Length: 540
Image 1 (cartoon, one colour):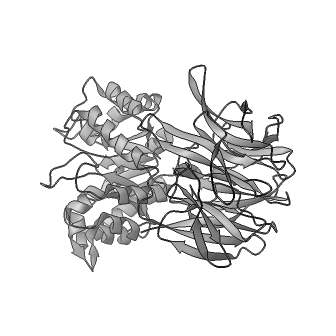
Image 2 (cartoon, one colour):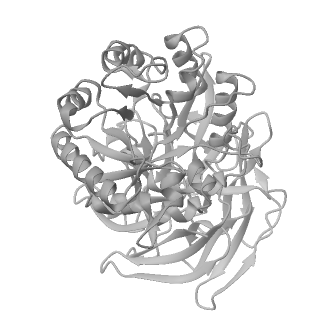
Image 3 (cartoon, rainbow, N blue to C red):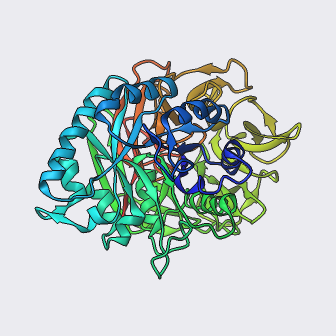
């Protein structure tokens, strides 16, 4: 996910200097900034609101730090400065210019503002840029025609303006930020964090009364930048923003308040059948070939779901009570293997274990950690997994194999982030996904690691290729390019399932859903190679 900082508050205390402070933001993990820029100097605010020429001087230095200028908060007359806006879009890749509501929140002034904003929006559209409307408290609290003045103005702009919702000001105005966000989901393109404590003083985001999880879940689902903004500093600018980054980053894998739907997709017709709704998170169905039964994980345990009777039962997994969504079934279905572990406080631990199909004692296969299982060879003799290992002082993520009975692991890949290894039904190939070309794409290699071949090459991030039992088709999970970093596969996002022939041809979308992590991490094809299972989610 992309986290940014609005520079209004930061600029009040540049500390060692502008560039040095911005370098500090980058070191914390922030990827983008939102400067405040005016077409003419504004007396008393020169450090907070940069004049246009000052910004032009600083912008190249900001980009040299590796920070994107994801948006600019603009002050001044837009209509007479659209040429300058186009120049910023073309020179620095700025695609979002943030504007405010007028002080006068009546129909007359809102109509006038809408006409001016639409004129400016049309003028910059050719440069690939849009205007975003930012809210404060007054325009959320004011009502016109049964809606907030903020939404009234957005409506007047006839879709030419998008929204940057400041959830802190929305809360301050007495509105429900979550409801405001989802009500305007088609036009919210940026989420702006403020927070307030019980005395209505600005606090570090996550330390006040804002329901930050619900707001974060929305931003994650929509794949939009999240911009932090605050004026008050407790421990100092970088210390407080470091704490904020940690708060947001800790939310990445949170699944609180999610319901799950277990579905079957007919790849021949495109029809979906929803088998059951769960008021908890379930993930990664394995569809058994000998019985009409699926295995999936939930709350660290493995469950067996009987499709015909619509019943589930908990499987005894011995010491493995923290199973994640990386589990596979032995070719003869006499056993299944899991990845078991969790965050120990010293990093994430995950090891591979094999368990009898009916449940029972778990046998350790990979003592090295972390190891995330994805494949079991058709001859039953080998497991394939993604592993984090240190090489020459650098942590690298590669595909490894190991004898199913345990033994020495073998590294097959080198370069990029490599994940999701799965054997072809004939045992000749291992399919996997890798970031080595920039975005996450689907690859295939010989079982010994030779002939590593790029299969997909599109402007999306593609994960987890699963081959049908007859070896003819491959399904995979696909994220939009800008929704997350190439090495991320987050839950609760708008994603797609794609299908292709085993030679990589005929690539096409077969389903759109709210899901991601947990939807189709493991092979879930039916025995007839026509249907496949997947999980979709709902935020409660």
